[in-house]
Image 1 (cartoon, rainbow, N blue to C red):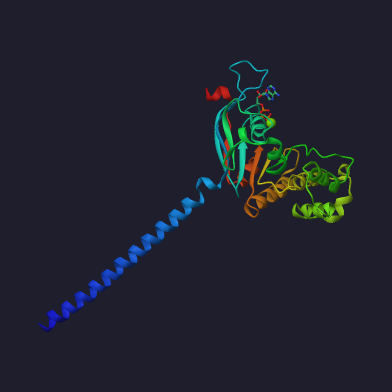
Image 2 (cartoon, rainbow, N blue to C red; image 1 turned 135 degrees about the vertical axis):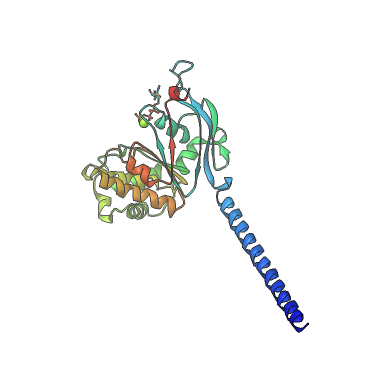
Length: 267
Ligand SMILES: Nc1ncnc2c1ncn2[C@@H]1O[C@H](COP(=O)(O)OP(=O)(O)OP(=O)(O)O)[C@@H](O)[C@H]1O
Ligand SMILES: [Mg+2]
């Protein structure tokens, strides 16, 4: 009886342990569920800054069935670095023209920050939400680095007290010393010019940066340095950075790669 009591006691104790074990398991389950929900929340549509929905594009001088892009659907999140990859003629530059609102989709649509580009003032969009970086830098060669950046501030109607100070601050962000501010672009290396071009694209603090083969004219070491800047802008400043590229080095660095295929290969 004593044994039984003891057993009872023991079994009650075990029961207690089981209850607390079950409770722990339940807590763990709840915690895991909560974490899972949080992960899901992290990738919820509110983080998608740009959504390309079934976009097709045909240049006005093209034949009726000659599309430069056909049924492209890509999503892009803030805080991430993307590559758009594809052979020559697959429509990468065309896609960037659509994203930047320079061209309008023939079919489908592009949603930026929850709003269709069709319903937006595209000049305002280009002058405040999106920074563009080109393969050949597109700087004015006879002006200084800071003058090029200030020109962009002026073009975008920014009201900043000390524009030169701001330009130097942006240059520091891309690894250029203040002494470069007064140097004519003509006297900068390709890598330095691309840094100035990135600083210029940041002058109005856009949410998104798109770059068309930004490292196409650079050696691998300089490419890696430029990629580090883009990576920081995405991961530390929560910008969405989209790079059109042929480079494996770029593809190895980004968070996600989207492939574009020739329209004929799709059909
Ligand atoms: N302004 C234009 N008018 C008519 N067709 C064009 C125009 N620009 C591009 N295209 C055509 O659209 C297709 C896609 O061109 P796009 O320049 O977007 O390709 P890409 O992927 O950027 O190529 P690359 O890697 O060589 O830069 C090509 O067949 C091209 O001839
Ligand atoms: Mg191109």
